[in-house]
Image (cartoon, rainbow, N blue to C red; front, side, top):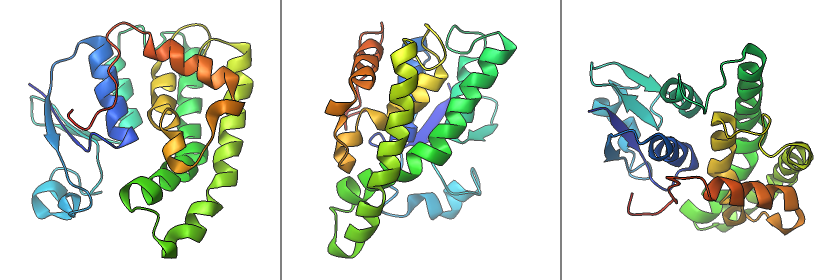
Length: 202
């Protein structure tokens, strides 16, 4: 059985768990304490020299890191990864957007507030993330006014990638009440069969 190394409260790790639930993929979860420095230990670095989670260990001993790469690998051949070439490229477009224009603001603000407890010496850093996070949400809102999901009318790994941190954006100080299309999108994902909520017990 494959293993997934991660932190259940991390959006990047949770989105892999969510896809596995949607696809009914069986796996062994290995909790990793990032605040305790476990990703920097030699045992972990031998698996992923970049020292980051999530990390997928296949049953043949191969490893795959980077959450969106893991999502697309697991979704291959399923309805969550479109077969159409252009649609696949659109999925990647949104996943690059997530990593470069969304996560650096929303996920980092959430980390400072939720994991670190918003210490005074990080408050300026936290506040500096707000403008970029709102901009990312506005881009999503614009798309979701025109289509049910980010790439057309079907749920894809693009949505799962962005859902990971968007649905907990409030924990980073972002108010989603002014983004009705995003709120509708969140509800649509949460009503999908086999949906798995983020919990500390996963």
